[in-house]
Image 1 (cartoon, rainbow, N blue to C red):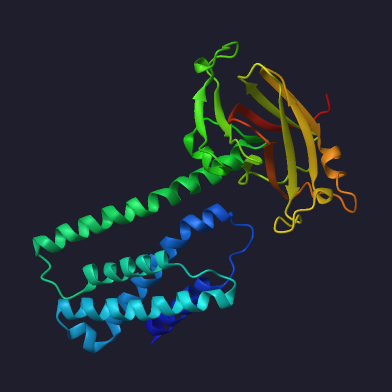
Image 2: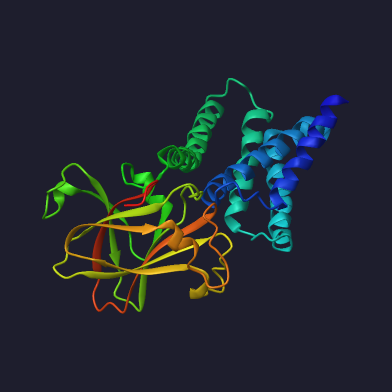
Length: 315
């Protein structure tokens, strides 16, 4: 009785998680990478329940078990994807693939097989290999989420390729060593190469970082401009209150940065950022975006970002 009650409780919790909104303290990037794993776990568990507690399925041949599990998974998984838009979620066909992958786990490890079947052993090994392949991106993100908090008050640096996943840009972002640049005054320093597209506006925006900037005085940006002419870059900083779906320049911080040829440092007082909006103060405890924009470019422009960090004093 206790086991069945526990199984029902776990089932109820898993259903809630498939439809409920995840708390905001979990990174959106982490939610996106863990979501497929959640589907796999749910349908692995439910597939095991069907095999364990349905005498008909339990006594069926392995082939019949597979057909039943896949059909039930398609019906339930498809129903969940159809219902999710009514719960502020988006139905995705890819989730159904993960549902089937989860059900296949229950089939391979709890179905009616000859346990010494070499084909079964090979299939299980292949399944586990694929599972680790699917979960590897999530493990990288979990590691990077930990590191970005450990690196604080450094907001952005580029010691590891996974740090590029914190950014979004119109064109691919790359990591390069300062030794590869024409000016090597600073050696053994890794930078992010940003290419701004020849468009009306082009961006490179930092979206995943430690956003509690309270207690600090300034934010410092380090750049390398490989161009002969200065670059005019728009810096935009927003907090979680800012409505990105209805952008209002008066409700965020914006400043033009003139980045000269070669190495540059720019510092901005956090008090200036805080008091930038006309009708409110930016919440320095919940900063959500650090954006770099260039406008009306006739050809692609390259800029290297070295580091972004908070400092506790005013220079």
